[in-house]
Image (cartoon, chains in turn cyan, purple):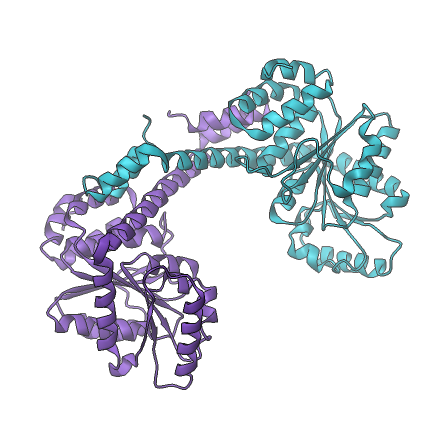
Length: 313
Length: 313
């Protein structure tokens, strides 16, 4: 298949899986093609609703995602999944360890699952994820699940940049205190206490309720849902809570404001990233070495040299 | 006095204290005048030798600086001192708490002492300090002491960017382990165990020697000097060690290579700082809001908008 971004977009919006795969790789890797693809995709986006899912490794996020996929497919709707792992060097086709169960859906043409990992590409996953989500959006997936593997800063940032953010805990996982420390309380629209057949559920729910009492959630108080994802228990309630949060957001322009704030952040991130690339380019190569030599000879001072490095050639 | 940078430089190189003070304030605050002053100063620099002095608060750095000033003045040489405190909001004329003793030298025309602190100016002290040091260099001070108050990242970076870096410890201050953790072992050319009349000197020296055995100092093994700065004990030895390190560096072009590496870092820092300013400017104001609105209307995609924000107006 040609790597012409515009031709790929034309095929992706018909749901062509190979084109979707190539486009995600393209926008992920950055560069000129990524920009062209992003520009061609963008007019076709804005219809998908994104659900972010985060929590500590082992909390059962993949099982929940799997169950949610099933729930969404039950309604006859298509769904795209981005499984984000900043700690893994594997990206693209790789299905990560405990995501094997999602393979059940891999042959379902209404489901598109993609793993994304850090490959040292510029900008990182926080910039690549919304780009990849827009590919799925343009391809007509009405629901997009963005699952991150952990509770590091990047994961929290990525999962928090969804329309509805679900934070997954376990009974006794850390009595909400850990969630608070990781900044999860701030980003959560919904809490899931998964593996709710284990001891300590009541304490975890109580801890969360207490911390929600203490925190300043303006108008939406995060719901707490108990699930046993591997047995499908509580998934209906979780899905209802997601729909309820979506309906709440669609009132009074909340969703638009949230998306505006997110685009504002994204635009600033892209600007910052482009300037970091500019800095890297300016501070390497022959031109830099030549100017450094001039500074060492005292022909030019450091400030003037820096200005020259940044002047258009 | 006029604030014309070039006129100020002409006066500063004759040793005019008021001009020196104004120039340091000027280069510290950044902006157009700072660049003009830096350019005018730079051809007059390169003769001074800088000694960096760092260590935990209370280790006795100010007493050591005071004693070193006395030692340098004994040889009839002039000396400039920059006392750097990233934790203080006070800068300029302010003599910080335990630096009062340096007041003894404040009336000596051969000594110029200046406190520098974070005033929220762009670039911060890591960029401002070498600029201020160049003012003192151009003003003809053959020795410049850069004293930092603590062992934070910025302090270590600043003190480490000297021709000779002295790390000040106390007996039992933390058996070298703390010094190692703070990155002091890497930057130290000399260790001073000050307050050497207290218990635990032998242990501290032994710990340091052991850690030096384990670390990979290429060709210069840092000396360990014991002092009681308040009584002037060990200051002669410290001074001799500084001169010895200087002589060592002046062999085989080591000092030139060290200064080249430093200038390389400084140039990259200035470039990065200028680009951060550019990012701040690009991501605020009417132009940013107008482009964000276009992105929200899907008239333009985020990447194209970012490129437009960074295009020359």
